[in-house]
Length: 358
Image (cartoon, rainbow, N blue to C red; front, side):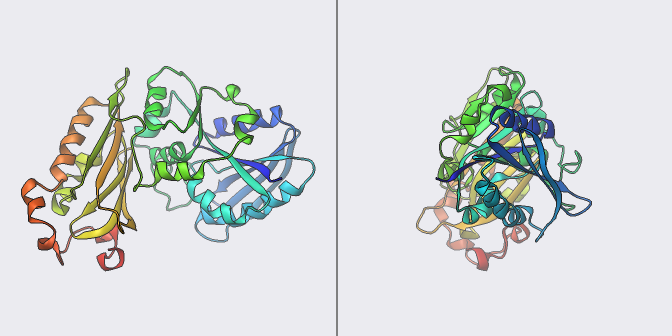
């Protein structure tokens, strides 16, 4: 029988550790493997904890610069050893603050022979959620970055955790603007819990994590809005913008700030007539936007779709207008893609060489 394994992620160390302690105290047969980054030493700190306290505390050198990959190599054998220990019958893997559970799961999956992932949980402060998700703070400014070159915004890190997790735990006002914002980002196949004290060990350690569903929530090729376009009582809004047409490269470059700046969480896909075979990802939060080539369209018809959430009504209308301005016009769409064959664009630094990605 595989040992149940739950992953815990967050950007608030107090909430992450409080959730961990709550589960351990309620389930003495559960052990936690917790990792924290040590930026100065360039490695990780590994702790093994159970209801009685600290079992192990030691530094770990990273095998490579990618912490997610290194964690897979480091945590895999440790988890297997814990699964064989008769003192415990279930495990929490507590990820470093700000970590993205998706690549960690991808790195770990091939190494887990005696364990079954039952859940991925993200915990956050509902009252701080608007600033954490939509504000301009970076992980570096809050002293939370993984490495010296980790330039992610806090919103980018938190959104990645929320959208991949199967269970989201909110501490704070369950009816406030922060809870409303989080509700706009969650899908029907995700479980929402209003407080750490309302979470039971069974919520995390029974059942099976839907990895395919989590992947579909974050994959730009299958991205969708949680519940369609809407505006909440506190002014939170979501747009679901889609078209079969590509973005015009020059107009996208001209309007990219209008489309992505401000207090927004936006993600999705787009395509360009200069590289019609490439699925281009749009991933933005806290005023930052990251774009890149993630796949080839293959047999699927290219399409453009961005799901954008914010809390300022002026941003909503600006984003809607900028999206329309970036798309091919009727005349450009009628002329087709032939005039674009071989034409240069300005996106090589972000999307790569077209010959390599088309």
